[in-house]
Image 1 (tube, helix red, strand yellow):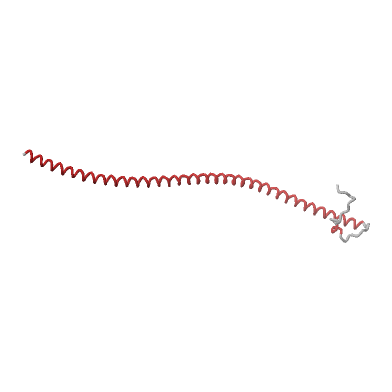
Image 2: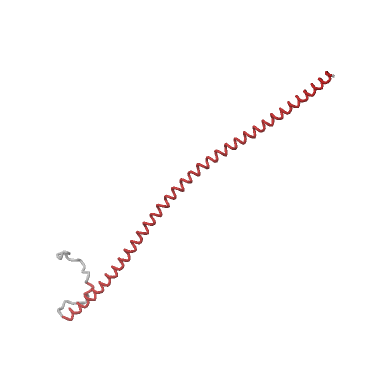
Length: 150
């Protein structure tokens, strides 16, 4: 309850009674009563509108809270997907590094194979020369043996 001993600085209904003088005329009282009833019905209508607006805003708030909750869930899912994608990216980077290492090893092995093939070719040429010399020597010895046996 408001404290009646405290006086309001400004009367909120001051404008409602503008032009009404302090007289005890019943017509004035009737007019004041009609004006008060009009104001009361107007205030009730405004109150009804405010209550309807409050319900609408409350419903909007509930809908927005629900939407916010759904968006938070979506955000949580997106963050989980991002973490998974980052993990996959990290694994792909490691695989790329392994591929690079294997390519280096393959290039080294190819170089060794080319070198071994060149050495084998060189050895084959030398062996072919030696065989040719031995075959010539064998042919010469066989020729001498034939001459000696004749």
